[in-house]
Image (cartoon, rainbow, N blue to C red; front, side, top):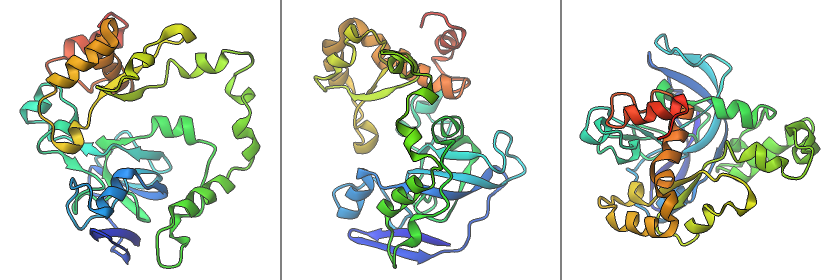
Length: 289
């Protein structure tokens, strides 16, 4: 298969690699579309050091399952999927206490490590636990891209891939039509998206206060975040204090309720066997958290 391999700073090569084979708990994915994140650019430019050269980049991608290992239970051939960046070890103190996988000191980081290639390739293998198909079905069901970003002459062309995907919509004008989405009157788009849309916020960003401004009639779902996953930040005290100053009475929603709702909504047992399991169960049952 063809794949983009980042060997070092300013050293991105398009190479022929062996076709990957899925293990018992993995699926083989044919990548339809892959994006280039700013993090990928910084790794290429030498201004970010979280990856381990050489590796296949690409942690923003979507593809179709074409083969599933015998131990795979929740995915099947034909499913459209995308993947989380991190797989936690499930055994370290961070994991046992319900910490995010990005904070696990033994996590596997897909798209940044030689043994965990990303999606800038024709094919990709991935463990079942890191893949999501729910949101792909909702957001990308109409698009069936038949062309890839490998059509460039000897180099990867993400822009060409995006254009190719857009051309594959049978009715591109329908993308701007609110009627198929059930939006028939002013305010309809708010009612449709507000309950289902989560957005990450930097904990020390003054605009956090605006995120919880309810004058528009919507209940926001802002999720507390910092660059802790990128830069090895171990002490959140300063950022938490600043976040509390900015959002005040919405602090619990910001740092726990909204992030936890996001995770249990995608995977109900996400917090199982963790210190916050009981509180997370209340979210699932509709109780106060």
